Length: 407
Image 1 (cartoon, helix red, strand yellow):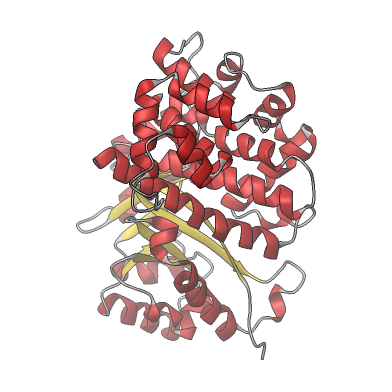
Image 2 (cartoon, helix red, strand yellow; image 1 turned 120 degrees about the vertical axis):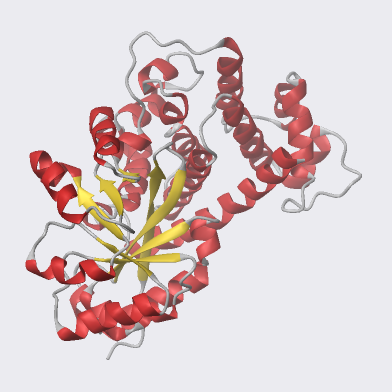
């Protein structure tokens, strides 16, 4: 029996009908592609629970619920019973067979107060056996295609919430709402609806231009101070933010220069960027958190690979969600921002953008659970470590931001 097994975690957002954040699906796997089969099931289960405890569900999902994938081995191990039932949804994967043992364990989980979801439901004999215990049914919009309305009729009923996954377009989103879906997951929610000719209001454009200039790695303390103080609301909000409990600033700090000297150029620049970007968007703060996690992961990945330019990688990660924040095509936004050609290339076509593009590709593959695309570029251990550090770092920044907004 193995003594331990690493667990690699990523998260995907789940939205409600108003496109507000409802939950995250946590994606995990144990070990690497070459050795995953040698890990004992009980060790894998133990490691899953341990990782959730070590990172902390609050760090991973905030106040939202976490959908946690459970395969047959994890299910039978009983490890899911150790999870907090008020914070998680147990998502039974479509690969779980309906046996007396699996049915009994799902019954135990339901009796213990856990919410049960069925993943990729397709009315096969195994899945039907689990229906009496499920509160949430996930239907794959892409895979079902024209059969989607028929599948909806099979599972709709009192106490059942429908979740549409792999929603790729607005048309699919609207169709799913008409069919009665209440929860949604997919590419449509992380990318903007393409509207040709959309312009950015001047106040938003100014905020974005400030955010872009803040990412210049050659920025000096004096230049940073001058850039921030030219925008009085930004200066005021930044000082309130850095003096929040999360940042630990002393009360006597009254100027931007003092804040920079206390926290450092990069920290102050990232906080000011968060404020500037938030001022240009009316989207939920979850996308801001995603931007920060991606930025820090890109920076840490570049550093881990012993490559230069980690500050530029940070910028790529940070601006990778700006099109979704503003519902504007990335190319239109970049044409109005003072970012260089290499960064622009990484944001529009990461596969052909060299090392900067590689960092973003790794992060996006990790978010989607495409572990096989990661390993040629970086070890899963390194990407997992980068993710944990980035989530903690981003949570601290967002905590300070939330305090400042509430003040």
